[in-house]
Length: 453
Image (spheres, rainbow, N blue to C red):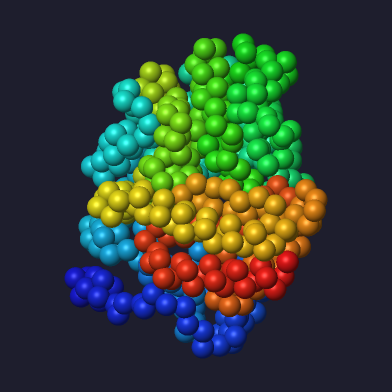
């Protein structure tokens, strides 16, 4: 029966890569599911779009009412290779028919080793590396901090304004935004220090990346002390904080300071990694080589998998048994990751991300020319955003962002907002999206901007 079931799964009729609405959104079946949800699911778990998905393929989601929606969020940068990508589906089906779990710490398997080899080869730098696998991005960040503290013997962790690193106790402490992530969930883990990020749109006019780095370094040296700083943790492009791209020179200067002072430089590439910004990793844009790098999201095509990859001399300092987790490096997730990374190579999804970025940038620029409420356009590759402000000011306009996202959703286009002020619209389409489909989605967004700004 298992071979037949696998064949049926793989040969499901393809989904046309077109937006198509047959009901209002949400439709009646989604509304019925939402009613069931209200009495079963904890209200603290939110959904930005109460339309319940039944199937997905490429850049299209089909809901339970039969509506086909354009997905410009990719499950928050997870399904970069597209929904139900055939190589991923085939790898998962084959693996789960063999075995689904043993716990690598008990009975190891080749798939875990192969993923670590692939990460060691692909992450920035040609030095000797080691990797360890986990289940979520937050778990990877926690373990990177553990490794840095253990290896350096220093406890201080430096993070940045507008950062987002997760929802566990330690990663909430690392995350900058109070609501909804930190509010009334404390006390938080100690020895975490926050310094200024390079935010070109809101920094003093003309501030360079080197000047912004000097500002942050002065804060570290004054508030923490070099001798107390174990690691500096940063997203090369901030995600939830608003797709903030630091000014050129900022990341290299911070990295160089870390190297000069024996501080571990940790790059959180959970949202930016795996071709999203036009290269395998965002650090590559300025040739920054982190001591440790955390990855997750797009690595495994929708399966839960995360990793810490780092210099061998750092990773090897942790005692045997000091790292791990029951589900970390699950074999089904591992084969999904290997298939996803192979797709990224075969389809050159880094180049695809650049083409997507060019297409979005052109449309965003046209919108900005007509709407003074679009204060800033930024991003890299297929990670693009616009920051909304009250016209003629720098005052964030979060209400406008909410209205535009809601209008897009009603028209069948999944978009997301973000930012410390809640006023940033962000696009993270699958890297396999067809230009015509992306153009349709951007047209819906343009109509929403015109109607709501």
